[in-house]
Length: 423
Image (cartoon, rainbow, N blue to C red; front, side, top):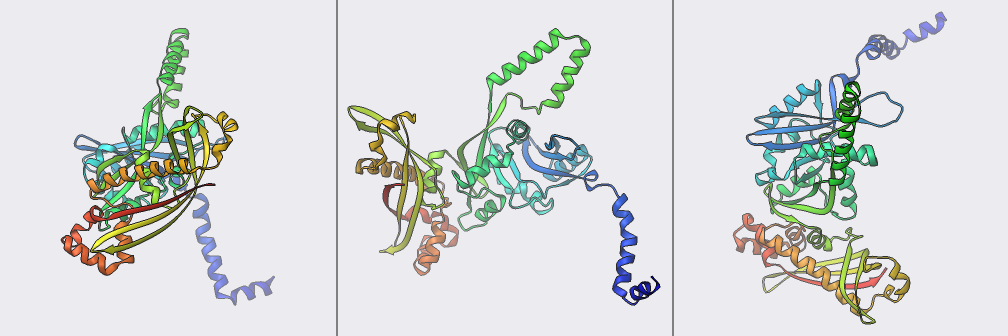
């Protein structure tokens, strides 16, 4: 034993290690948990109430339970500035706010009437709001959106960011993170897209909740009524009878302000040139077959794109070759007709022409909005800069310099060549 001790004392690093363990182990064992001092925020909401801001925090509350379900709560604070509102929310929470785990940031649509960066600048610079947070807006208050998310977790096990996350890889195919917003904001065209979710009232659910509450109050005694009141308080998130709906919409921003609201068809038009944009449904309503007018729905299963740019007589020309693999999914809104009309599995020239006309119509409508708002979220200026730098810089100088590069989209001639084939 003495020999082993002598060997240890001959090793200085071992002595240092032993001292560190003796000094820090008691503190590590008996010090309180970090959750006592810092609240973990999983989603953040920002609203403007007159001259005040309201910051709402969806916080994760570590609680021992046997259901393995996270318990969360919405805590809010108001103030004349975002910093003051966050400070007041911390006071209400009784903990310091930690935004490093905030996966979703929601702003009210009214906030987009002014430069939204003036609102979120403090949160991203000082409060450590992560840039990979999903950045979305809603038609109602952001606080109401966070409160409605309780039903998603409790009933479906679905978190708020997953509603947008699904569309990020299937429908939007547009990065709606805070980082992507800032990249668009500080780009030469100063334009970007963010996701849009709506909160809708569920009349049936509201009536059901009202009937249950009325039955509890009238049929039970005072003690029972007190119990029912406490259940309502703990189970209600302030948004009963409401649900969150994602209709594939988005908001087009220029210099941090809302300039247009895009529906799903316009968003599909923007994503037409994106090779990652698949699973979109194209509906054709005027197919004639055996004396019947059929409505047919095709899904874009695969997409290949080849894009070239050039200048002809000082005119920028954008050429896109698209190969779309489509699959018939419904006829007249049902699957049953597919068994009878199996001949539609082959894409005829008539069907291909109608699909081509439909997607080009969507693209034209989207392009009209982008030109009216002088916004470029499809990367036209960037593509021409890399492919035809000399001609592009000359053209921009003739427009009036770099300050006018956002108007470049108005002068581009588009040529779309499509090949529609069964997948």
